[in-house]
Length: 180
Image 1 (cartoon, rainbow, N blue to C red):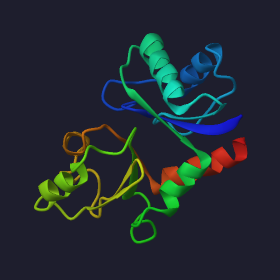
Image 2 (image 1 turned 60 degrees about the horizontal axis):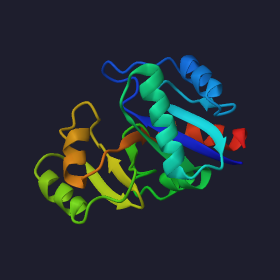
Image 3 (image 1 turned 45 degrees about the horizontal axis):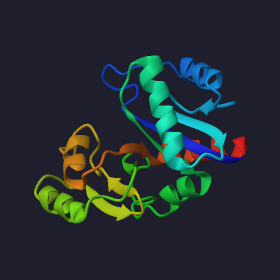
């Protein structure tokens, strides 16, 4: 069994509230085995040999059926989470709370990243870079003051994403390594 991280998009923001203890209980009851959550933002560590697409679908169905929330799920391995930290070109240059990796379910549409860069050029100081199924983002002055929203990014890339800052990712990676 390999250790995986399920990143739940749109959880515990807006009205989409799920207590992590309830999520762990429901997942265990639905044959996901022993799961561990990290923080309250929808980070679930589990063991699975299921392929990524099947695992994402099964978790998304559970969230919808048991909690009434239609969201999306992105699954990554320990190596992919480590890479999301180490390969982020902005990591180590600014505050770990301002530097994010946005996990994408797939590579953006053809030309999507170029559209994002062009449309963002006059909007702010944020720095962006594209990686394999990730968007690296340095919010520079803070997420709360940025005009670079999830909807803005999604519209240009042609796919949703779920972001985690470097502080959170380091904590998650440590838990994944301990879990293994």
